[in-house]
Length: 113
Image (cartoon, rainbow, N blue to C red; front, top):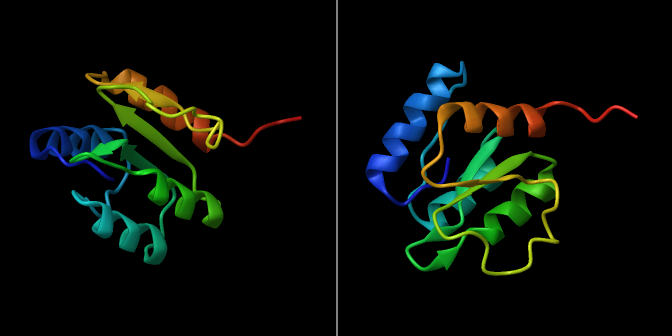
């Protein structure tokens, strides 16, 4: 989980736990997030796009290279074209637990076809 606002991070952690997920780490800075994305066993990630003025896209690159699905969260939306990560849904803050659950189901359900 990558989120630079403590209150939002705590709320998101509670929501993920309520949905039956285990949170293995909370990164509030880009360097921490890159370390988690590179070293931890992760099934899915939620990435705040804007981390104190820096974008979390390098974290998304690492996760994508490892085949780990992720969701973006943002109060501002993407400022860049989102064609690099077309499979990653973006939740607009503030979002509800139902929205989070739907986005998680989307990225965790294998495509059939």
